[in-house]
Image 1 (cartoon, rainbow, N blue to C red):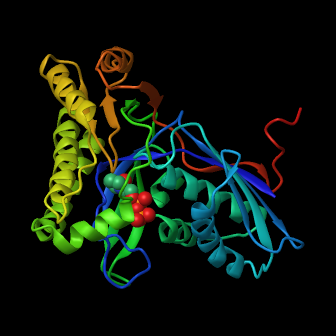
Image 2 (image 1 turned 90 degrees about the vertical axis):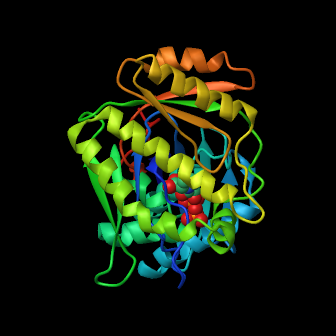
Length: 333
Ligand code: 2P0
């Protein structure tokens, strides 16, 4: 048995689209920041007497999530020569499947907990791969701070490498998450990416330009150049949504409050407040600021009609074991 925690990550240079050939290989690299105060905690217990895997999300059975959870666990069980089914209890302290990267934190926590519970000694590469098979953005949540998912042509086309670029202490940016809807999104990321790849006229140019965006964001992080990171992050966000909007049928992940938040964040930056926006496959807006500015930004976002709630976070660490594999339970004295 083990318990692990992982936090969602927010892509500044977005992943959108998969390579042909299966294995959930992304078509493009990406660059993200891992958050601190939003989290998934997952407890897993392998039990020889259990006939099937059992999965509770926030205390309730989740039959749709269960099949993805079992698929994620199967290669880890195989590696450990374990045939036991598992009881999995997962909790998010933020809305699930609403564009807040719950699958990234969820599968990063699950893989980390399963490895600990089975006492497996594995390479980072194996761990990254298990997380990526479950969800393309999940391996980024295995690491803290600024993380790049890099694509290589060797040893095989589409080989992925996870590169931590800077820690939260190196550049302590802060994030405000404006929640504008609590509904589960109508088109999930996997289906949305496939629809975009098959029908958007801009897809090829999206793939071609991604290395340039990654290079710009990487050098911005290395130089702690906020203005440069702001420009490339907003560009990548708007380009990803433009790409998805141009598919057939076009994918509209935003609502009116989303658009109002973007306009307000642009205005704030024009007034000299160091903040930029990004939006993932959902209507929530993430505002990223230099240290010290986030409470002011959050206060302004809370005034926008349609904004239900604003959560703030620093950047945080990667996935980690809270108990099990020799560690005591966090609530033990
Ligand atoms: C990202 N997103 O880079 C992009 C930006 C959403 C928008 O990765 O199909 O749940 O499981 O690999 O990782 C969300 O998609 O997709 C995502 P799958 P995932 O964060």
